[in-house]
Length: 191
Image (cartoon, rainbow, N blue to C red; front, side, top):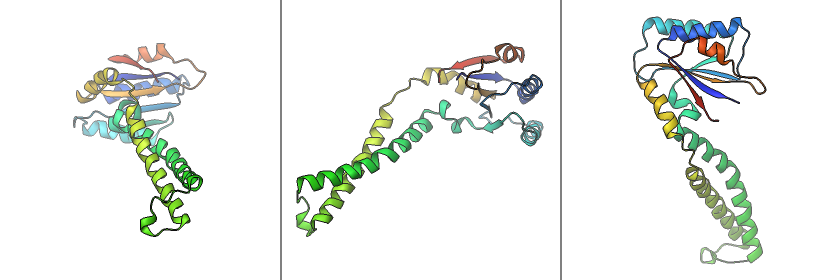
């Protein structure tokens, strides 16, 4: 799938692109209009946004840049950590139980625990090591998108309207129509 960001000065240009795409029956798997980060959204633009949301045929969503995973490395890391945690903690618990039962260690005998209690504590220790592993593993992945994202963040801070477009699998991106909408810039994102 190809992802790109179109940069526009005004919301009206974004809505004109939406109209053009609808007229040509071109649909994307995802289209997100990214709101400018400064408070430069006028009342007219808010009204236009409300109207666009009401007649939303093309799956246009309006989002802040902080809520978009591909443009927010911190959010991306948090989502990766959560997904890894969901897998590593149960496996860590099972591994801790198995290790405790296989070795018959009585590490916590000073607490007066039975064999079952020792196994449960071993499982809990394995689960906590899975949690710690998910934190370190998710933070160790470096996608090196900072250079790519910096210019996009600067456009957003300058009050520009950004549209993140992702084409459907098996379909070519309609580059001619996108260029005809006269965006200030088109930035291709490696997925």
